[in-house]
Length: 391
Image (tube, rainbow, N blue to C red; front, side, top):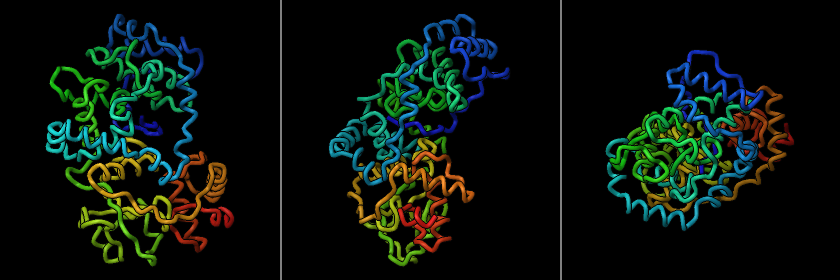
């Protein structure tokens, strides 16, 4: 299941020119406002009434929205937890089973099969765990809630459009708590824009059709900017004298330039010697090391969690035959409470960390690296007690 800290590109669909129904207040009044918006934008009253007939607020959705502590885990812990031998074996079996589908996807969209297999595994365990939240109830509940209504309101009207064409049932369509549907967990807006009938039955059914789900996921990645037939992540060996302040996703050099600085592929040859790439040290200079190519950035359009993205991208390389990474001996990281204390100090120094949430995301990493450099510490973007104490 995808853990939706993500804002999916293309999901913010325009719904109507009239004023939007404000979040909060009476839930029934909020739904009445949605009905009025839907009819004002051209949907028939009868269709709108059927669509919203049994919508209800879902307390489970709100509880799930406030409990996303999994992303406080570090990369090594998280990746080891979610990448099992069973998932690797199932991935390879599915690669063989749907070989013709993957061949077509690679030809049409240039998205490697390992990438889609990893998403399929991590989102729903290859379709086995797709979520049991009523999708419409979750979307309306989250739109009514005033934390992030702008993310979820457009999805309600996208679901209405899917309903009109027979690809969404407000009573029976279920999925993740934040409204994602199907084997690779796509939001209604993404299905509306990028859904593909991969099996030729005339419908886009991401819950029951692997060809539909995989092809739709590939099209969405392509539309988000995936560069055809290019790599995304490669494990590397970094020299001890590397300028750590030049590492991180906000610094790029060609792989050949990194090579001149002493960086080497851990296995085999360079995947993209002439491509711009970043040295990625998810747990600092003493932990695992990767070279992140342009396609790695597209992962953040699918999910905005740094640890999820890095784990998914690495998993994709494993599914295509790469060995287990060298975990190294990273310095001990910070607890959730310590990370919040660090973020508070970083904000006080003028940094944008994207919120004081105890999660080491990309903005926090960049702020950490900046302060490490200022304080004369190795600027590898991995926060430690030494940095917290100096701040």
